[in-house]
Image (cartoon, rainbow, N blue to C red; front, side):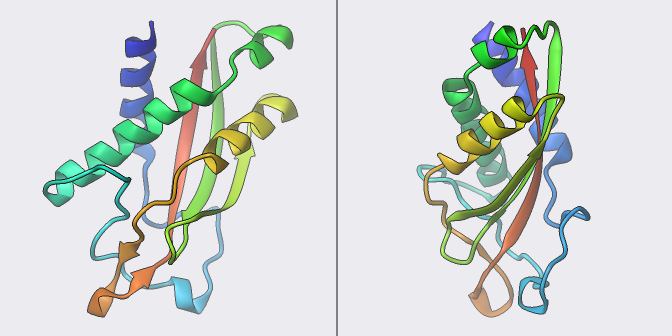
Length: 143
């Protein structure tokens, strides 16, 4: 079941992962072009492998830390979709995490879980300068 959820979350994450999120307004200093994506700790390889590794690691993190009992206690059944947006800052920290879901407690749990992500190697822009990289992430919870 966990493997199926991981594969499902990975597929959705990779489909909706973006380097610019229309839901967020970027400042002039954040409008840099991303040349190299952020790198999750422990990921290595080509750019394609790095992106896939980051998606896998974030999906696994969500599976490991999201408390599904919150949804069960609220009476939800089936698939629940929670939309999360966040930024990987120039120092690799996760900032500006926001979520929208069918219930505020589920959105709060999604924010909590994303805030638990470890520091990530920041994305690089022109002249190999660190840049802010926004992400959009749908989280699907299957009850």
